[in-house]
Every structure is written in C-alpha cells, then in structure tokens.
Length: 260
Ligand code: DGL
Image: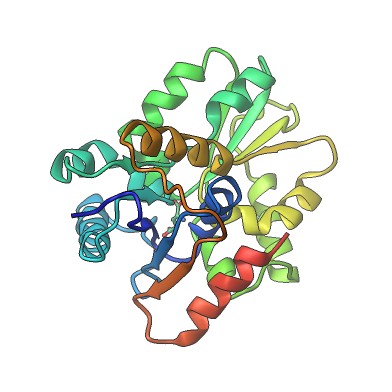
C-alpha cells in the first residue's frame, strides 16, 4: 500500500517528461520520483489511439508495480486519453498535462496563438474542446510537429537541421491570416528543451508558454488533499527507468534535467 513516503511516478513516451519533472523537483524537492521513459516505443504522437492507449497502460502498470502514490503523466499525447486512464486506475491520483492554451489565449486577446504538438494531441477530442473554449479569445492555430521530439531523444537541441525544420514549420503555418505569431504554446513536453532554438527562429517578441509549473502546483494540491505530501526534509531521490536497454537514455535524462 502506497503512503506519503512512496515515490511519485512520472512518465512519458521518452525524455520529454523531464521538462515536467524539473518543475516537480523545484516545487516539491523532498519527494522521491521514479521517472519512466518509453523511448523504445517513442514517438507515440504519430501512432493510432488504440496503440497509444495500450502503451500508456503498460507504462502506468509498470509504475503501479513500483508502489507509487501518484502518477504525473508528463506527456500531452498520453493525456489526450486521460479520462479513460483515470477511470481504469481510479484508486490512484493521476495528474495530466495539457497544452497551455488558456494562459496564452488570455494573454493575447485576438492574437495568433500557435500550438506546437504531436499529431495525436491535435486530432484528439480533448484538444478540440480546449480550442473551442478559448477559440473566441484568440486565433488558435494548430501546428503538428511530427519528427520534432526525435531531436530531443537524440540530444540534438541546437543544430542547423533543427533550425531548418522550424523555419519550414513556421513558414508553412496555415491560419495566420497575413498576421504574425504572438504566442507559441509548447504542447509537447519534449519541446521546452528546444525552446532556445524555437524562440530564435520565431523571433523576438513571441511569447512562449509551457505547462510544467502548473502541473507541479496541481500535484502539490492533490498530494496535500490526500494526506500524501512527503514531510521529510532534504532532497529526495530520482530513480531513472527507460524501456531502452541503452544506458545513455537515462544519462541523457539526467543531463536534460540539469539543462537551464
Ligand atoms: N512528449 C510527448 C507529448 O507531450 C510526446 C512525444 C511523442 O511521443 O510523440 O506529447
């Protein structure tokens, strides 16, 4: 039975969830964490929904097997099916990730808000509802980015190929109506590691939004409400797990966690 000293499980299709983990550690440093990245099966974002759901269940069950007290889904693509997952694992608090469309749309009324995310996230019902809710506040432009998370998985966060990918992406955006980009929502947890280059290519004055800090606050609220906040002092530990047998994946995870 998990208790307040049990670890928090964090999962993603790969190493993107580390951008969420760093916010969790910043807000709740004395918690212990198990980070699971399913890099062998990444990317999820170009797969069919049934496949994504089945892989997500495997990852959640693996963490439940580690006796976690809560799970943070550090992945927008997995979170697109969060209702179903919460129903299946109802005894466990599950915190989800969603593109930060709300703060972006509210900060730029009538502005052009570009949401960079996986194909699966952008085609889902959950995103359609989000875009509908804030679509009257701002012009929400979908920007599916297949192939982009792979730059992070191969530790390529600043390269000419990446620049070229982003330049082509922004040049081919549909829906700007002759205007400019006001805000970019990083709707995939891998993209914060590419933020430097995204910002460089998008140009000065484009605000970038990511959800990590809000997820950390939500985890804190949920743990507190369940009497599950770890009251130890000092730094907790992080256990790194990856479906890939290549030890370099966990090493890359640690490096990304330390990245500014
Ligand atoms: N990091 C993931 C997300 O937030 C997904 C990347 C992928 O597997 O395609 O959506």
